[in-house]
Length: 348
Image 1: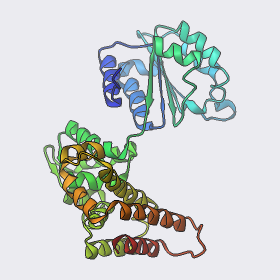
Image 2: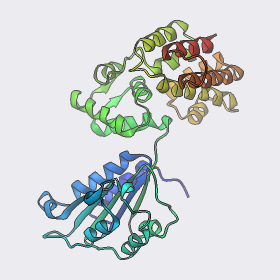
Image 3: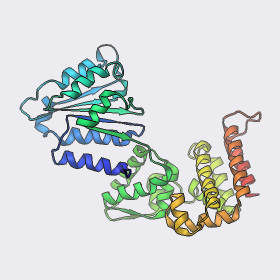
Image 4: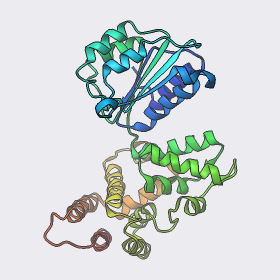
């Protein structure tokens, strides 16, 4: 069976809710909180009319203490109530992973899932971890409700996601600006989404977003960022690489080495992948690396500048630098000095 993309599943859930094809239980879980929060919020805002929410919308929070602690009994007693002057009531359990007895009371939840209140839409936002998928409760949810497992995106998936979100907002973005954004913000969808929302506020619809827009509105230098650093390293542009790391050394809070090292590691890991390929056509390289074809020429050049042996050595240098940043080695150097030493080793 072909694997269904996560975004497709989210779109199907949203479509069903828009079409009023409701399920009695929604269990949103996983280590990526972005979609969990967005889906719960969508149900909160789109099932009930505004005039119905005062009496028919209940938001419960896990993690409380004393009289504020939410337990399974409270959740189920709320879910079993009947709506007032409405066809449905909505019960949303936020931070459900922190409900005091949720793992001990799965049998109680199972009994409810077998015979749910049809006029109740019960939503669990269970973030950062998962209940045992083999439990009878989760199996019942999958049978009669909706179970969604939100997974973090890989680095190479982020540019496509950014472009897709911006397209939905009425914008386009060039490849360099996209990579700047992803390199700086990483794979945290909530963090990236907030920055895209800011761009929507300040830029007119239809704007083609460039590196200048990112620099002016997100605060990422278009010349001094990790994306430009890895490019300079790959092309062996010694002058540019040293300019960037000197800038990083002077601005360590905005350019932490612990955020820089993984991106350099990812870059040289891609170079190693190229060396392992039998088919070194541009199409094959783009597919295997999971990058936009726009950047393939750069990676090909980098693979010529760093043979397999040298690329492996670079990975070793990165491990040494990572160890040094964590204070494991005897000599404790400032982060800027560790980065300068690393870049010197890579380039020479």
